[in-house]
Image (cartoon, rainbow, N blue to C red):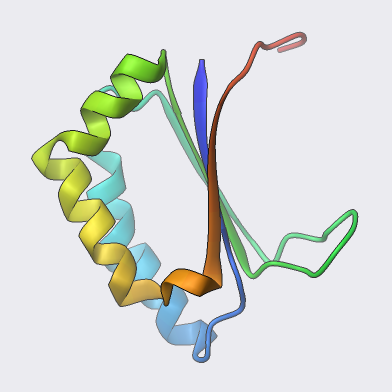
Length: 103
């Protein structure tokens, strides 16, 4: 499995961010080809470091499926919409392969 994790810093207008995320961004994410799992959390509590405002987790079967999703028209639309949510320096993202040990 491959996970794409996105961590958003607190935006200038949290209500507008959440409204746009729920009403506009989620519909774009839900149609990404091959997406197996999508979850998000609001105001996660950090174990260390500064808190983030929002975290999103998206999963695909493998790296090829993730790359295909990101380069699809749906993936390009979702990526383009990120600029409507926040500035580039207000988010961190990472992609990693993982193995489930317990489920």
